[in-house]
Amino acid sequence: MKLGQIIVRRVRLPLVRPYRLSYRTFTEFEPIIVEARSSDGCVGWGEGHISPGSSSETREGGWAFCREHAANIVGRNTQDAKSALVQSMARSKVAATALLTAIEMLEGNALLDVEEDVRLPLVTPLHGAEQEQIVSEVQERLAEGFRTFKIKVGADVDADLKRVAVIQAAVAGRAMLRIDANRGYSEGDACRFAAALDRSGIELFEQPCAAEDWAANAHVAKVSTVPLMLDEPICELADIDRAGTMEGVAFCKLKLKRFGGLDRLREALERVRAKGMEPVLGDGLSGDIGCWMEACVARKTIHNAGEFNGFLKPKISLFTEPLAFASGELVLRRGFAPVIDRDVLNAHEVEVERFAPVIVAGASCAG
Image (cartoon, rainbow, N blue to C red):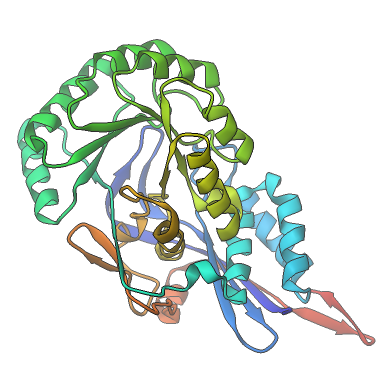
């Protein structure tokens, strides 16, 4: 199969409510959307949301990568195009994954075939800060069917411990808790926080210290009352192998956008379990396309609540038939394949470029 056309778009999707992380508060998502078309008119879609502050990648760099490589691979065989992208993905893993997954969808990757109805439980964030807000929000989320809550910490150890305790009391064993510092703590503060946690109802403590500081995270894992999960450092199979040697690290969180494609993601998830840990999957900053793809992979690999809940955050869906959500779960129905609502897509475009082979004197080249 040859790539007949590639269209890359930058879009801006306003959120229902601000999404707060330790390093940034989002009021909108700004992903790159890739549309890949074969010469016979089939289409595949990919998405890449670069989160400023999460890694060294930048939105400008990702956009430049997509434009450069779309021009380079259009007109080529899909297998050759994927190989070229994998070889270059160190420059921008998120952008490369957007292109690679669009090609995988175009090829009809089997992981995207939904053979039967499936319901995948989701994590939901808790935003409330004061006791009254927390109690009310917990009741609302429970009524919606969620049974795994995510608590953001990483700013003030004492305030964070107090808030976690209030949430534990409000939840009263009716849901599991995941605590995520988003790399916000120093080693000393993270150790003090982790050692003081009442483990009741807490599933894991995610990424306490800087991604590159493996030693600090390892120290926290040794003193923590609850199992540790690594997130941002897990970008390659070698990272999974390294995490598997660390005492107290029981989980690795993987995201499609870091692994360069559906098949590579599945291999990485299987590697986590082979190394004696449990994989967690999902990117809360992905939109419809990324969440759908992660959910499709999760059907085959994941046994816990998914973090592919980003599709619930924007005010609008890019799909003509939005991803189904019911009772705290993402519902994939047999045979579901998304169709992009082009009116919505066009209305939220910020920038778009189209690439197609150019025929010159009997030969073809990208242009």
